Image 1 (cartoon, helix red, strand yellow):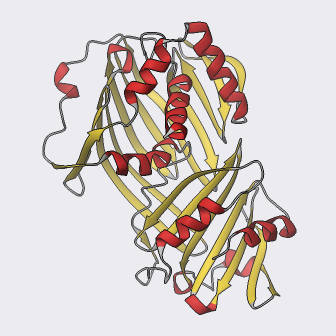
Image 2 (tube, one colour; image 1 turned 135 degrees about the vertical axis):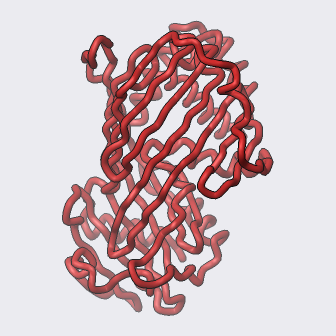
Length: 356
């Protein structure tokens, strides 16, 4: 529980909550972003009460491909936050979830005991510990922004409102650039009502705690990797228990790295470790899902060690490297991707810590 509270407090500090628990330094407003990179589309945000109330609507398409596996995701979602209450509507599926953020009041109580300067010092220290840094100021149109780099992302922030973000992590490029910004705009209170047109399912506090890491990910929704699809065949679930996968990840200690998120999408398991701007992603899936004729797969050097076969090499378009491990007994493939690149010996040491 303490770890989750600390992480919630960290998010509050990084988002500029002051003594009155303000998220933004502007009382209300509206901003619209154009999304480019692997994700294309638009995102709109309305807020009031300095961010204690917000409504976000995103309509986008995300396309990625690695080792012959193509992932295409269509998104039309609306997220409403009112203090500790949230509603998330998926208009494509016609479904929604709602609930209460765990430890919200603990975080508020903690923040209320700090002065504005203490909160700023806390945020600066946390930014440094995460490997981020402030790059100075830069003007975007009429707005003077503070420029921050963190975990492979660069953001231009005006009064705690990000106006522009550029990120390229694990081969995924995601850019947001404001095309319309109306600070201090009056926002109708109806914007913060639960989204209409979907049936909501309540999420328990335990489920929220388990999914919190995914909500924090700076480079994508790690818990939302649905719709993986091979170009010709359906994806097979891996023949390995997800609870056992999670247990192995939790027991894996990589010096200097923090376990950040674990997800299961229709039998494809993913976990991430982060140290500042460095990332290690671990994927477990059925061997048949990988296209052995894919150029990137073939470019990896094959070698043997013990009773397993491996492939290792640099990623063709990124400053990264990959280690593939075959598990014939389970007909599965373990993929370890490091960004930036690691040597084969370094990645073999990581694989040795993963006792699957």
